[in-house]
Image (cartoon, rainbow, N blue to C red):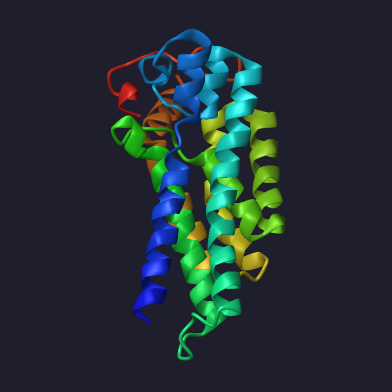
Length: 227
């Protein structure tokens, strides 16, 4: 049992490190020699990369950040596969329940890593792209439906942050609709809430009517650069 718990802890740690990989920061340094945390919204996420570096770098960062989340989830699945084969799981453990909760913790660790990267002094992005990767790895139906909500809202509003928040709100509902395990429903709620909290300054600008739309530059401020 002790070895099993150690393995679970290692998976969660590695998932955090996956999430911490500073894709947007590296893109800024390699392409323009800048610290992307000091320009635009101050986020290292794909939206700020898009506005600062262009469409191709933005798409690349979006893809890699999504893959980070997906890798974290698949790491949890792989551990269970290996542990089952090697008879490492204690007999008292319900495999399906433990797997769902370990995958949930790995997903949350990846989200935390993306927004609080150990490689960037615990700064980062807003965890949206990594969240999409996590959802697609857990349930493609939930992942694609969340992307659908995002797409509809962005087509109407042309505002990325509003679309991200709408997707975050929809996740928990979609988890229930597609009959996901309780652990994944909790992941959807906790992860969605975390993403919304990470967008709190965006929410303030949405209320004030100053949130930039696609194609507009985000104004830099001291408060924004804390992201």
